[in-house]
Image 1 (cartoon, rainbow, N blue to C red):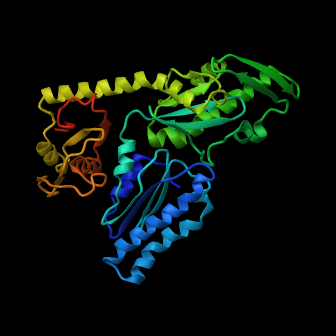
Image 2: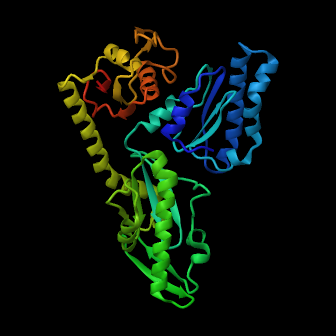
Length: 384
């Protein structure tokens, strides 16, 4: 399993070998709904088989399908599903990504991997992590303004104070059970082996430091997402003081995350995140307007297509859900041609340009239609 990051997308985009197989499908978290997931997967494999047989022999097709068919009976795939699944396979690649968002079923065989659904999700700037923290254990969520889902933590990230500290846990460790409501109020029941508050404080400090390091290393660094702390009020100051994570948001959620429904936690997280999100959009728009005034920005799709193939685009802003019925027909000149699109989910001009800019080391950001500073559905800041 791979964490969905821009680095993974860059890796997939760098591959150009036939055939590249891309499979997307929605999945279900709980029984009995998740029993239908392997069935849908097998149906999509049938579509892939039919596509392969148009170009390859039966033996070649069976060889290409073999690694994908092995997943049908793999309990690690189907017993711990999230909202979606993406699988990529070629002669040199086998990547499986569990997705925090629902995707439409899609099976594509081509000379490169289809990454549009991944990029569309990654390029929205409303995404964030929520770290649920208590004195005993942690939980981690990934969300945006519409969704919040709990993440199955990597093995490298300790889930409890015992896992984090092991033999370093004080001999006279005090167990504290905190009971907090949505208001953040709490009371503590102490019971343990010695009852020394000082030793409990030492353990809490060690635990928070270990968790801070692990989450930063395995989630914040790879994804670049802001991190919102959700914990009882008395834990915020200590964690903020110990954390060296530059992505930790100064404002947090002062509530025991396990004491509120997930939907309410999402609302509380967005209350914290929305001002940060709006600030990010405002800064982007301001940068674009300044660049355009300096002759280093534009919004004409023909001009931007040429700039994209020449590697001149530093930042490309695309309107969310906008589709332009055209394609880049020449990757050397950037010439474009308007044409009917059989499947706009798969390809359109904005998708072509987004993929090119990423390949050239640029940044691509998806922005809501009400915020984008142009009428064309795109805006670019040039390197030169």
